Image: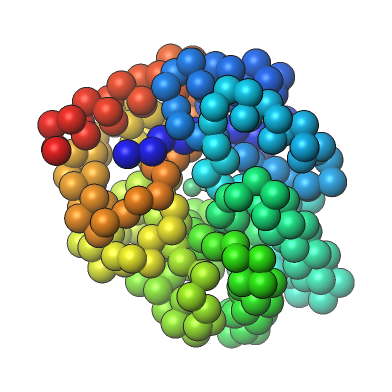
Length: 271
Ligand code: LER
Ligand code: MN
């Protein structure tokens, strides 16, 4: 089981991030907690020096599990479904820069809220723009051998792709082998009739996995049955990272290290 933790390279308004602030110090602490990798939430790849980032991550023997792109929406309001075609174009250009960065860091690229929250125009139009953008992104990523992970996100954050079934429908419509799903236990707890059944149903289309408990604290701090969730995930032969995306509560380092101990103890009991 490979564990990673989401780390934002810059200050962000999104709160479910254990660490923010000094980059090297955070990488050091993530390694100390026993993680194998780090998921980098990056608003704009031009704001970072990718060689320097890679050097620091390598120094602490970590790898990059994935690149998160949601801050392009969260901070800059760029989305694939904005009614303004110039904004949609800018969102695609931004995502292409994320793909280029992922190429040098050997990571998956996440499609979360960069798709937009929907409801800004006719829903059919938005769905069409989204399929079109997903095709363009998959095509560009395919050329570089990069995999993309589309994340179903709960209804309180977007009306576009709330659950695993809708996620699978989009994969069908786009039809690219390098486009899969990112399942997040926090969203699944809200939207899926059965988290385990949905994991099983997505099977080999799961490219990345986010963990947070029912209250979006670290796994073990809420009422989700992670033993059963992990069993279902391992049952799909998933070999990717299990990435912690949770609130820094009661404190960043504590939440990060409690998540590792809890998940590793569960894994030992499952095997
Ligand atoms: C991002 O991975 C996520 O889970 C969303 O809740 C971001 O808004
Ligand atoms: Mn997530």
